[in-house]
Image 1 (spheres, protein in one colour):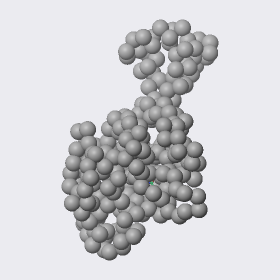
Image 2 (cartoon, helix red, strand yellow):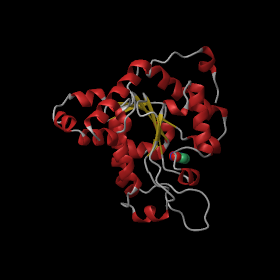
Image 3 (cartoon, helix red, strand yellow):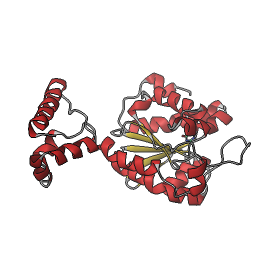
Length: 264
Ligand code: URA
């Protein structure tokens, strides 16, 4: 790119920022290309708070930081058996700047097909829970301990739980995601998420409804939505809702009377 062209791009981005009051989005790769294209920009790159860095700061730096991890996950073959059986990896979805992050177990058949976590029946229930809390899926971040669907014998139905080795192998990706997103609150959905995040095993009856800490981030444990699909007792639904009320309180979100009395 020539210097006048680069100046034009920078001026346009600045205009967008001035008119919208927000930093325009620019991916890390675009930023790198712009810097590489201009001798001026390239020299500025050395400085920590360079002009170009400041001018082209992406709206969400976290989104840009997640991209290389997404790419590593996309081509990951650490678990050869999962790499060969998966349709695609399922990295995570939602707002990288979210205050609230949910962690589930592993993609199921629907997630494996669509490349997005929690889109099947359990996911629809999670979306309903989020809505009752006052969130859209786009407001929070959702990921799993495993990025690949655990393989199952041909012709069999259902999902299988991740093995400890699969969890150990995949965990570093999730840790990186959490480190970048730095949510104010994490929610572990079910025992596998608890084991993956905290290395703790126990019954959900003992674990849920209490605050834990995951690398300094408050973590609430609750039942996996798939459990609620299997066990439709109002008392179990109420427990999950009480856990979510604790989450809302921790996030200092106002809670309406209707929400307090809500039953999922
Ligand atoms: N269950 C999970 O734990 N994660 C998904 O993404 C879907 C179902």
